[in-house]
Length: 302
Image (tube, rainbow, N blue to C red; front, top):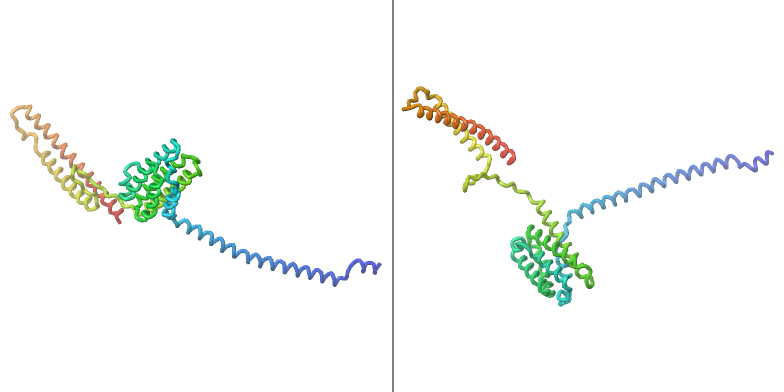
């Protein structure tokens, strides 16, 4: 029995060696896992930081409209008789696009030079002159740098409106109208976005408050408000003194030829008293209002 038990069960020393080996392997496994975890975490954090930096920089980068305008010109690089061969309904859409491109005060909104180019493009589209419209559109990219914010905005709106006319032509030919529409709408939205951001970045100028008395105009400033308050005080004092002077005249001293004249004099005396006392009250309110207005304007200015 003893030999059988010894054969079935290994010695205690071997068991203890096997357990010690298992414990050692588990310890080394835990150590390796923690080391790998630290190694992976660092690149992930760096990669995340780079992604955030790239996204923030991409927001501050605005699209350059010059390549977009060049893309419009390239989309009009068509056979010389392309517009002339359009069906009647598409020719009507082309005329509508020409109308939207130069509708309204185009010279005032876009400037003299750009406005003339847009008018000439309109005439070329109305004549179905493909070559002339292409040569005129190639001038737009070089003019973009000299445009003001309002001119960019006006050009962008006109390009979007005309581009939607080309979009309504559908899939004609090899899809040229849709390519033109996409190029015009994309460039128009980019120009409008740039002009909008430029207007937001500009420091808004506060419009000056003006008082108009016929042809006379007076700017409302803290100093002018204080001067008006002083004038109101003087006018109120004069009105009050005149009213007190009229009130101090005794009715017994009024001597007239008949009762009607006496009654008229009393009525006139009451009207003058009411007038000058009302003037005194109005002067007081005006003075207080001008003083408060001067304080408000000075606080805004500071």
